[in-house]
Length: 534
Image (tube, rainbow, N blue to C red):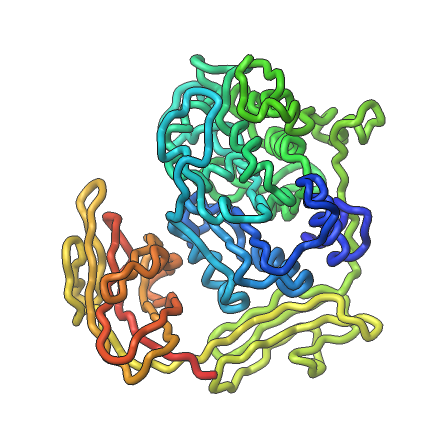
């Protein structure tokens, strides 16, 4: 599906040629000439993890991130260490990291923090210094890929309250709030439904759309519409109208025009869910940034327009001016996919087996060896980390492939939570687990322990935990902050899960510290030090 929408944006018929065209057109517009991607150039992928991941409240799906990285790394040969996947305003990237990092370990997975001060200027209202700072990943990138969600951000309202949300929709525009150092000062400016604002008023999203390091540096806009949220912290809802037919939206959308893709997302959501008033105010401002209805002198006014804004004719036909032949505005094109194309339905590892299901394939191969069935289970008997590649073939040609890395770790040091030194809100439970239990509001606690290793090298922290509060902690090694993303996914019942995080540790004694900045957490049973068996 993602290949389909990327190819459809170009005049090409293969995914490698499609990406090459996107890079060349982008560089030509930037005044670099129609040149291809050059090894060493940095790509920032802004995903949406507004709800910190690890639950059924919709965030970026790891499968979608995997698909994008597969195209960039495996097909376009972009070095992994030149790519940063980030949401600098959230601490929950482990929901993506856990699944994708074993396959692309050298990609940078950045969550909270890492800002460059005084980069963004706002055209009106916003004066906060933190709001002017920009995520370093975006600041240093040669290319931005804005990978957003299809989400109604706010339920219809005429009075703001915390649970209602701030604005009508979250797509590619508001996605960039996760690139800003301090977001709350922007919130009033996006409540277009408010009686104090309305149509023809300033909206700070427009400044982000126009900024040279954000909208002005975006290679392509992607919207992960596999599921749709009814509000900023909601669970997925089904869409009634065809072609969804009371099912999941199961789609990707792509464009090189940010105003156009925002307009289409707004129309899709409004066809199924009511929106708060003046939902498209920011799109009128952006489409006419040189002479906006508000009269605001936007910083990007010299661009004249940031793209095309219009609404479709109706929610049944979904036709815009190019579809109707009445203008040169938006064309909504449904990418035809071959339903008979050999495909991988699923491929994953669980305990000591691989599980897979394919469709329409003449042949299925696992690491080059033919499998007898198109669906099945492969028992695993391995004693070292192994990369498995599943392929479907037709006519002797590979039509789809997917990798799974099964890691084998050996404990070097067993560190039980109950034996760790506890500070602040860290509490010991009767079952030997440690849990951070703070009072209302913010609190802080930590656990500290020492290890003694025979040699310097690459190790893993293996955190055993349970619970439904997947709030990450900070990791310190010998007093130096190593990560703010020692995170966990939610668990069900008493079944324990493990979060695995790579670290470099010195020979001899080291002191480790997990610091929790919130008032609650999952239960931690142990944090073992392990080495990978290669």
